Image (cartoon, rainbow, N blue to C red; front, side, top):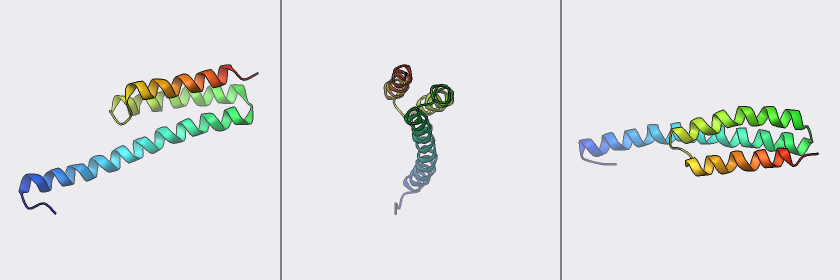
Length: 87
């Protein structure tokens, strides 16, 4: 544990930030997983609806800096292409 007051504060802040980022990252992964499940099930309309929901989650996580904006764009693009490729 840190001995200097400012270092103790930084450690407290890091714990808070870590837990917040963890929950946001988990939410993004869950949203992506829900779209992939819908794609695997073969239901194009459900997959499109899940993609709409996941887009907002991914965008908000990227806006907060938890996920890089290019990584967020890549996830959204790949999911959209997978849905478009469904017959």
